[in-house]
Length: 290
Image 1 (cartoon, one colour):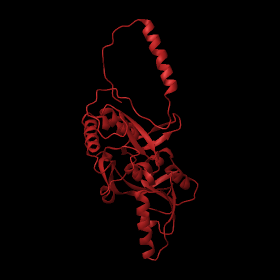
Image 2 (cartoon, rainbow, N blue to C red; image 1 turned 30 degrees about the vertical axis):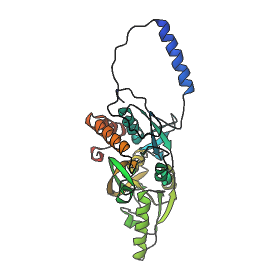
Image 3 (cartoon, rainbow, N blue to C red; image 1 turned 45 degrees about the horizontal axis):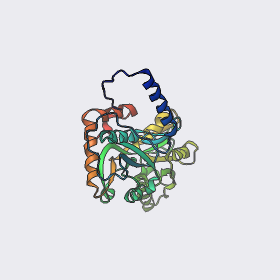
Image 4 (cartoon, rainbow, N blue to C red; image 1 turned 90 degrees about the horizontal axis):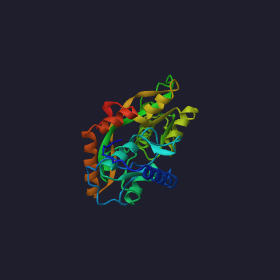
């Protein structure tokens, strides 16, 4: 994302031929579709944390099923998304590279505590319960919203309208917790419970709606907006965004070196406009910036 200029002296043509052949050999041997990162192309402005699990790498835990925030690009077989780009930019500011470690959202926090990776970037909503166990660097403002079939045939505008209906949701998310609470409210009012279909993969959750197996899906607002956008005339957003809260880069409690480095790198990206460029690239609105 960042480039630097430097003076290159003229060298014999043979040198460039050898260099080109060497680069091709490295490219053939260095492919790895399980991770993605960026090699620093600018002078590092932030010292890397001393607590890195692997020298020279920022290991980033992510459930890569949450388009457009983090996902596997079928065309390139590489990880992509806003969070993936931001992780690469943060690492670049520290003079290191980022490596995505794919994991499931329902185990992602245990994996972080067990030091499988340095940080988590996976559209993690910051709330009081999580803040007691982890430190966060907020980076994106999101909320929750419903996705329904076009025309919204059952006039669904909030979780209060879901009593007795079938709803798709991803496991381990705040939306699952909120649906649990809403279902209890339904039953206390003498209405039917909310019947949840809970899946690991957000794309599979959306497929439930597309095939008519659920009446709605409930997920973070950027994800709702994305699937609505790429399926014109098929879905609509039900009601408005609720429970607005930031996403946070998640860091183990007590890892102050990591926390300080991530904070400094994020501030650097905001100060020079790189953060704004990511929002433009991924089509998000200014209101979603931190």
